[in-house]
Length: 400
Image: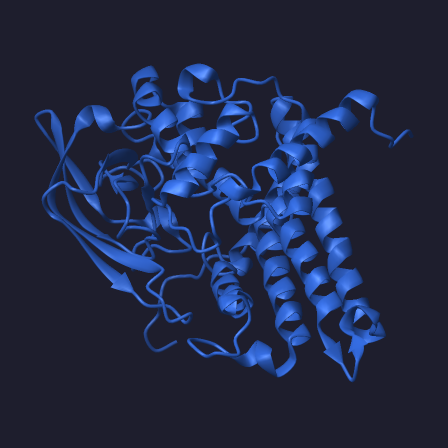
């Protein structure tokens, strides 16, 4: 097996690396928000040069390149190696855009894909409800057709970016008499419509990274449905597939690994660099092997997608592996910093604005969010390994 790059691919890798280094002055800072001008300009430049939205057609605002797995890998390696801010990944770009490309009407694609890719429109996801988290199909938010509009009433919870979002893609129940998976529809609509109330939820990082959203007689034009009425569960699973890919992004894990290696070269105990400590180096190498395995699995999933095939087990493990690995990486970084790794909040001795401490706590939440680890393991065992389905609890019996 020849693992050497061809001269053409070596030239491509060097071109990407040199581009990122030459434009370092244009990199947005680590704390740049989603609407930050520098972040929007950087995203635009990456799309124009084919380093973001690479294979999305130009008519929808992408670069329009033919799929090339190796070039995609070389682009990701160049971002990780140089430390350049990667293309923007959020619920709109990483989850809704591919869902619309697969399931949306031509008008929906023209209206939303390009604007979303450029960061001009921010989206949030209206999926989970207080009584429908892991059992998402149990959702009760209703949408009743009244003339040419759906009237929505209900509540969503754990809605990331709802405070900042312009739009929402939302699961609603349009047929209360249908089986619970069959009466669901997928709507997209503005967060500025009268009747929408957003309440922030503070998580253990101390920030309001989530929200609960209330809908009271919210009127949405019926043509803003993706797919057909009652097909929402199928469309939603398309979005969930892309969400798992976003949460288990191997390129992000590789960038974190490189940052930890640099941190271990700088931190010392009794004048010994942590990178030279057998104990810490052993932990690093184990996680490094996980990252490389995650990258190989990502290429397997991409290959299957390009062939129009199911990724099978490779696709089922992405979210579970990625979220748990990211949490372990953040844990190693905090341990490398010693007692400084325990600091949190505004203190003069904190490193890198407390980013590793924040990631450690936030990533722990992501092991639950987007499908808990326990649910993911059930899916892997049942759908991937063909094991018997988990038995459902029987009806409650009084006095038994």
